[in-house]
Image (cartoon, rainbow, N blue to C red):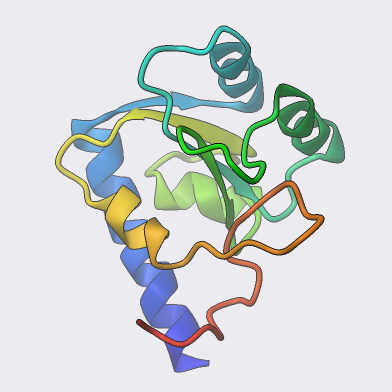
Length: 135
């Protein structure tokens, strides 16, 4: 259980750095719009664990996070949209966000250690709630 809190706190810290120094599109509509238009520099999509299925389906339709998609990756934040909003320093829920520029944060490096893929699953992310061993 301790591994979960350390990983989540690391992600939260990097999200705060990202919001203050990087370029982020907040909200499901903005995220899907950027991905459909293949906004230049789109790298990582983060969605809350309770993100509406319609948004997840939209990501699948666009093809984000599928095996072989080296440019874009989907990360499931291991908590709900209210917690994701608070982690980003916002007083409202955030179902999803799209990272265009990581700024001074090291979120892409941090998340790359937490990604895993499963066969026949189009979305990738932290599903084991912090139970994966550190590399």
